[in-house]
Length: 251
Length: 316
Image 1 (cartoon, one colour):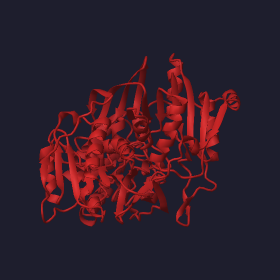
Image 2 (cartoon, one colour):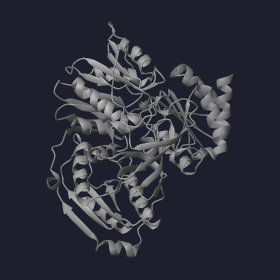
Image 3 (cartoon, one colour):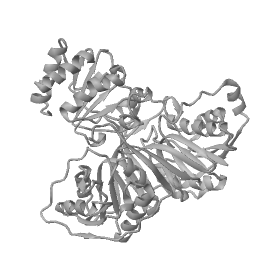
Image 4 (cartoon, helix red, strand yellow):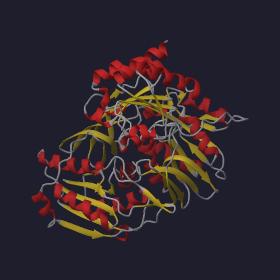
């Protein structure tokens, strides 16, 4: 079987985000593989380690700097990668259309997508990709087992959790808890340099036109009262409840 | 035409339904507002919906409950196409975020996700949403229509009823049997209050010390004020609380009237899930905890002493 993992490179969570004019300025920011995508790579590797015969490959759609994270996925255990390189900012639905064409071309039985992107705060790529492929999807997956071509999995819902069964092919989006991703070892980082990293462009996959455009970005600021209550536990508790009741009037 | 897909719980509209109406009323030039209600209880929920001047259609087929993305996508996309909807709005719940993107792809339309504000000039929609772990507000415009918009829950002011009621009728829709077979379901432990709809959220962090700390301090405090219980990533990773309780980047995103962070340090990934709360209260013994930077009211102290004192005050 073939397992595809989709990868995005995002600012490190601890990096501070600035704007220049009305746009986010990413100059000087440290980038990492999106943590949610790491779960997907790790899960693919674990399926192979559990005895499933699988080719694992990575698809990434983004600018040149994504190469670094692609190499990380190769060092972790992905066999090869396709980098659809573009500086254009494509909306998530258009990305799904491009990636779906790439998946069709490469072939896949199972595609892992990060549950939520740390740059766009989007959880839409997985469902949109599944729809573009005509496949089912499962989102926020915290546990997965594969028997033959049938997945049994647990995922988060609005009200709790759900255990489900799906026959492949399918798109699975990750959630923290799915696994504990490993770190690449030095020998594997060296080996990854010899693995195939093929370049492509959105034009190779039909180059659909973007459906949305970003017209502005601004740092979110919300002024807080920053009021600290002084005293022992009984005093501070009394002051807080009084403030919630009489000042903020929320109780 | 604008199509709303409100959620209801066994025939009773979710609070987010009125927020959808608010969002729809701001989309000028797109035509009348319609609503589609799905699943058992849909007729009762539709009857509630017409008070907002909305034309409500309902399909009470059992196949829409429990939610599956495929069944809902087929019903909503099919109905939207027939209606000629230029905008389709649903709440940005886990379900809404799951089928919304599929509807966008099926309609060949754009997607605006987790929106906090949207306007229209009749030919496109411009919306605001959060990005970069909720640290940035992005303004994004569609090139054309239709558009699917998931509306962030508990942000917009709930709509008031309209002067004249809309129409209500049953409609026949296909129920697609999806390829995701649900084997079993387990409810979360938020005490019946949905995290993203709660007026008050009490979240415990690692400082709570263990699962016992939740039973002893967090749950009783939450019960006192009718709050939902939340948890941080560290707590969930440690197995003290289920994943469904988690607030943050990989958990739920909430914006309640009051957010009480108890023993929470305030990591970026946690702040991204709660920094839109109207009022934030922090209790932590570490005076340097980043949570205090975003707090309105702070107590620097031991939660094992402060929380019982809070409960005593509330009950007194």
